Image (cartoon, rainbow, N blue to C red; front, side, top):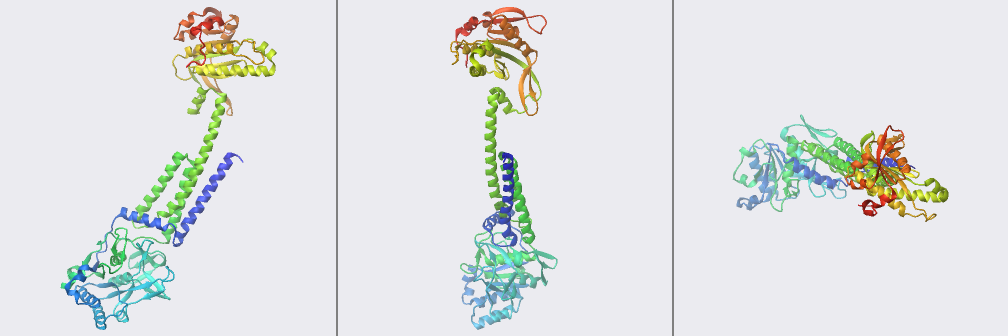
Amino acid sequence: MTPLRAQNRLVILAVLGAMAWCIVVALPSFSGRASFTDALENRLLDLRYAVAGPVVPAQDVVIVAIDDATLADDATAALSRRALLAFLTTQIAQSGATTLALDVLLADRGDPGDDMLLAQAFGQIPTVVAAAAVFEKDASLPDRMIWPLDVFRAAAQAGVVNLSTDANGVPRYLPLLVTVDGEMTASLPLLAVLDFTGLDATFETSKLVLGSRHVPLDQGFNMPLRALGPTGTVPTISAQTLLDGPMPESLAGKIVLMGYTATATGDRFETPFSLDTPGVEVIASGISQLLESDTLRRDQDTREWDAVHACLVTLAGVLAILFLPLSRGLPLALAILAVSFTITSALFASGVWLSAAVPLVAAAPPMLFAGGLRYNLERGQARRSERSAASLRRFQSPALVQQLERDPDYLARPHEQELVIFFVDLTGFTALSQRLGADGTQQLLALFHKLTAQTVEAEGGSVFNYMGDGALAVFGLEPATGPADRALAAAVGLVNALSSARLDQAPQERLQCRIGLHSGPATLSRLGGESYQQVTASGDTVNLASRLMEVAKSQNATIVASSDFCKALKQGTHVAQADAVHVPIRGRDGEVDVFCWTVAQVSKLYGGGRVGNRA
C-alpha cells in the first residue's frame, strides 16, 4: 500500500471515529438523560451566568422573609409557629396582596386551635401552600407526596415546591407538574401565577402557554430556572415589619411568597450568583420567570441543536488539523472551540441554553487524536523530505541544494548573472584508463570527482556537472567576496590534491589535470522535462571557458585563465607568475589574451603551500 493511500485511509478513519465519538457524547444530552458531560456543563453554565449578569425580576413578586430578626422579636416569642403564620397571613391580606404563596410544609399536626386559626387566615386571601414529593427508590421518579393537613388543604391550594438540582445542589429546573401514583400535581409557583393572573395553563410539547406568554419547557414539564442574581435580587421584606401592621404600599396587588430564611430553618441553596440562597428566593425566581422576567429555553429543539453543533465543531476542528499544517491547523481548531463557546454564551445571554460542554467534550479527544496523527504524518513527511534532500545533496552541490530548499521554483525561469566558470579534466585519461582496466578506472574517476568536489566546495563553488574525466563548476552563485580568487585557489588546490593522490592499482602514476577559468555573464537555467530537470550554466562565457581546455593542451599548461578572469582577481600578483599568450579560440573570430600556469608555476602560487580546503 502506498504512503498516500495509507494516509487517506487514516484520515477517513479519523473522521469516522470523530463522528462516532460525537454521537456517543451527544446522545445522552439529546435524549435528556444524565451524561458524563453534565458536571462540566454546569461549571460552564455558571461561567455564562457570570458573563450575562443578573436579570430584572418581575415587579409583581415580593418575598416576606421570616428571618432571624422576626423570630427574635419579643412580639413573636409567645406565639407558636402556626399562630405567627396566621398573624402574618392576616397582615398580608390586609395589605392588599393579591395572592399568597406559603413555602412552608404544614404536614405536622400542631395545636388544633392554632391550626384552625391559620386555616381561617387563608380564607382572607387566595393562598397556595407547599407540598413536597419524596424520592426514595429512584431519583427520577417520586414515590409519595407530603401533603399539608386536611384542614389547610380545605382552605388553600397545595402546590409542589420541589426543585431539580445538579450534583452540587444548584437548582437548575423547576418541575411544573409532578406525578405520583397516577395523580398529577402542579407546582406552587404555577398555581400562584394562575391564581394571580386568572389565566389557564396549557401545556404543549415544549412550552407552557399562559395567555400570550409562552414559557419554554424541557422534557417532563420541567422549566429551566434562570437564576436572577445574587441573594436579595427579588424584593424582600422582613416579616418583623409586618408585626406593627399592614404594608399596603409594598404588598398591594402583589404575589407574596412567604417562607423561612432564618438561620438553621428553611432550605438553602447554592446558585450561580450566591453560595447561600434561601429556598424561598429560588421559588420566587421561578414565579418571576413564569410571570414576565427573562425565560431560559432548554427543550428538545435546543438538544438537537447541541448534537448538530457538536458534530460541526468536531468535524471542522478535525479537518482543520488533518488538512492544514499542524502549526496552522491546531490554532484554527482551538479558535473554532473558542468561537463555539462565544456563540453559546451569546445565545445564553439572549435566553437560549445551548450546551457548551457537549461540543467541547465531543471535539477535544478527536482533535487530540487528529493532532497526534497529523504530528506523526508530518514527522514522516519530514523524514521523507530529509531523505529526499539527502539524496538530492548526493546529486547536486550543497549551495544549489540550499537554493532549491529555500525556493523550490529557483530558476523556473532562466536567470543571467556574473559567474566564474571552472572547467577541469584529467590529463592522459584515455591511456591511463586502458592500463587500469574497468575497476581501476572507476576508482580513478571516484577519486577525481571526490577531490574536485572537496576543493571547489571548500572555496564556495558549486559543481554543476561531471562529464566522465571532466567537470563543470561555477563560482559566484551566491553573493561572495572575490569569486575569481576563490576559483583560482580551488584550481591550485585541485592540482596539488591530484598530484599527491595515489591509486592502489598504479601507485607510481602522478595524476595531473587541465583547468580553464573564465569570468563573465552566464545564463543559469533548468534543462529537461517535467519529470526530471537539471540546473546548468550556458552562454558565451561557458563556451569560452571550455575552449580554454584546448589552449591548456596546446600550451602544455595546467591552468589557463582568460584576461577577463585575471582582471577580476583581487590578488593580481598571481597573474605575474603566469605566461601571457595571444591565441586563437576555436569557433571565435580573432585571438584572445590568456594567461597560462604550468605545473612548476602553479607550485609557486600562494607561497608554494597547499591551498586546497583553505578556510
